[in-house]
Length: 214
Length: 60
Image (cartoon, rainbow over all chains, first blue to last red; front, side, top):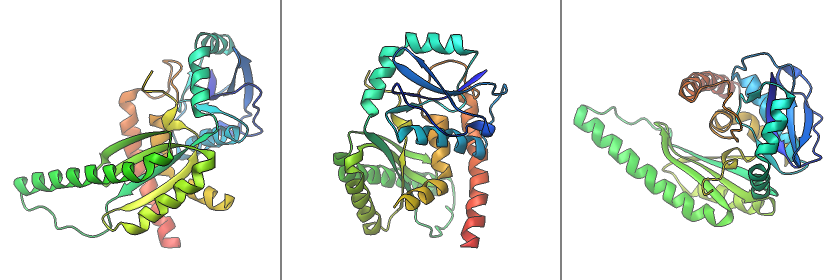
């Protein structure tokens, strides 16, 4: 099996080690470069080390050009199948690369402040607390959008993806505006006491590899 | 600047999980994890991450 890390602009090579320290190779086809490791054993378990290795390869590639990260765990049977996929999907993958080229993903994750809330007394209390949390999370998501979307070309946001996380958002940002985005997000973080904001990135465009509008 | 970014990336394992298992382009049906398994993996990895965070927090 061949393991796929990313689809890139042609000509991108990566001097990095992949999963389990195996070399990363470039396969060029259809005007695209696929970054792969061959001879990867059957199952690829999503351990922290494996996730970090995948991310390291993609992030290194992003230093030299546009990159569409592959979903973690993507494998193809052999190089013949890989080349066939690249040819078949050449135009939509190229369009995806144009969309993310020169841009990075920045993450903003909100957490509820670390203060102990009394446990709800009963079923009705529990439901009310849940509804209050949802309303607060929605308002927070709206405020984040208001403050940050103007500095981004695209965004993905999910409200209350987990009980401890009111909002998790990702923004696709031009490299030239990253500093401005980070400054505005940092200002937002210090100005709010109803949530802790965690800023992460720059990331490869994991959240923007598929275009929702197409 | 660079080191700050790197440090930030290292502490963001929970973000890594969300992005790598939930994002990225899907070019073939042969993905190690079935969609149904992703939530399960996320739960167990987060538990692991939470314990790492706790250790790191105590150390600093």
